Length: 328
Image 1: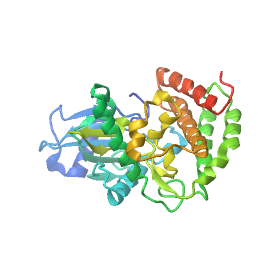
Image 2: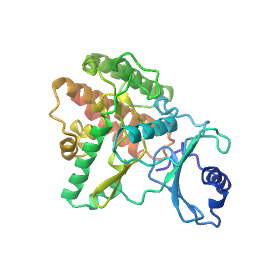
Image 3: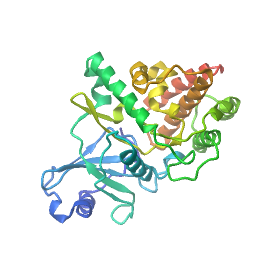
Image 4: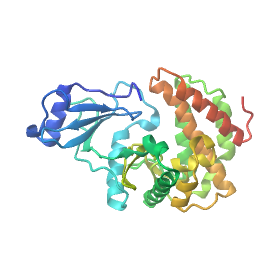
């Protein structure tokens, strides 16, 4: 996916990064040692073969002169913190960080190296899998997501703080930031910003049920799941994690909108019972948050076609209809 947030670097800079991370004796030569991994939407990622044949991945944060959405500030630092937490407190498989550099001495942004994971991307191959195998992976994903949510935080909000006093305060700040991002760029939602703010205010009381901050991966879509031989071998891309309500996880989104797939196997693996009325209200607020991001980020990413924008605008109409709003 093309995006102006992708901070591509010259081969000379990449070699300098490799030398710092792995030593000069492992710096590759020739012309065929690097290729860009094109599936990401935010950071640039390179697959690199070192001189000794080992394969690694380099992720580089966006350049500082490209404006990103408010919730994306410091995203790579969030990912590094998430990887430490998940490794220390769960058995969920995540990449090992070989080397991270936040000095901006070789590059104008944060970057880190990790081993290349020789596995299939579940999001890419799932349609080619038998239905039973696909369900088994989704069930395993639900179980892994539940384990991630077992990590408790000291307060709601960013992993490194500051904490919000309640989940209601935290989430209303988060969704408020997204709306402010959209207004700043005059992104057309097809609905008024004030109308959406009023809807949020009318339903935010249901957020008060959430009293314990939990680690929320939030971006755990099938495209961030690496699989091999019937098992999940790695969960990748952790830069959007925070402490909040586990019901906000991506796997629950299809409860609201069928365009996001069938959640049955994920829910079975997670062990999630049917949602209460208050939980359904919360879940719709979380889907609204996601859809607003999907619309507004197309402007910040500099998308050259309207495919995602048009798709997300239709989903916004659907989720507003679930709230009983006039759609159109």
